[in-house]
Amino acid sequence: MPVDWQQYLGPFTVVALIAVGVWEMRQPLSVFQLSLARRWALHFGLWAGMGLFVNFALRLSAIGLAASLSGQMGFAAFFLVHDFVLWCSHWGMHRFGVLWVWHSIHHSDPDMDASTGLRFHPIEGLWDQGVMLGMVWLLQPSVDAVIGLQFLGIASNYFIHANVALPVRVEALLQWVLMTPGLHRPHHSVEVAGQKGNYGIVLSIWDRVFGTLHRRSFDPALGVEGVPVEETIQPLYVLGKLPWREWKRL
Ligand SMILES: [Zn+2]
Image 1 (cartoon, protein in one colour):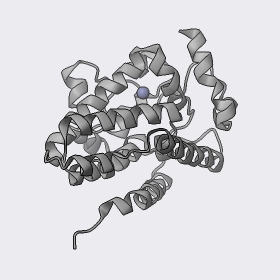
Image 2 (cartoon, rainbow, N blue to C red; image 1 turned 180 degrees about the horizontal axis):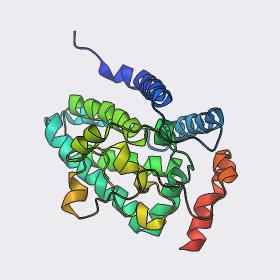
Image 3 (cartoon, rainbow, N blue to C red; image 1 turned 135 degrees about the vertical axis):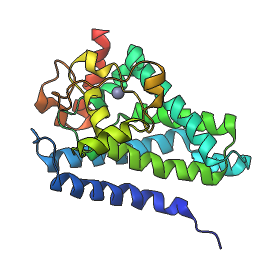
Image 4 (cartoon, rainbow, N blue to C red; image 1 turned 120 degrees about the horizontal axis):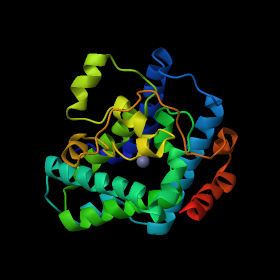
């Protein structure tokens, strides 16, 4: 009987976060400004709330859609196209104000660790899920390709946000193909110029191709300009004011 990998996605989200969290404790890059417990509580709350909202709004999972379409596209091809589309989507979030206002919640974290990978506004979650569903509908990948991609997405999301300093040679080697903590951290710089680049999710090749790969300060000040640190740790009903304020700045 084939293994039903889908049932392990939820536990993997938690176990992988703890594993990267332990790695961060052993080799931390930066000292946090805010309480780890408060940030992790907020980020888990956002993750759970976003999951409920997205499920409620769409009631359709990418895996369920792939199963109903019985598509055959393999993992490698689907991964490549999907990673490029996510690069375009992320570029668009920094290019178009109407998308940035939601993405600004993710960028408002003044500290960065694996849990930052859970910090998204539910509207951004809805957008991401819509992109995924559209790709499954258009490309018709196999169920295994969709499940494999979701495991990879969870792992890479924690990896690029990890508060760790990889050995210099390892970091340099990985950067040729992959996004790394050293490439993604400058993208979270409080400087707008720093945010305009390194849009990759798993692969760094799209940023190379489009000339948006940069290696600014490895450990810059993080966050969104003009947002006080204490404001970034509030529950969503307070934090949720941030998109509206960013909207007014457009
Ligand atoms: Zn971004």
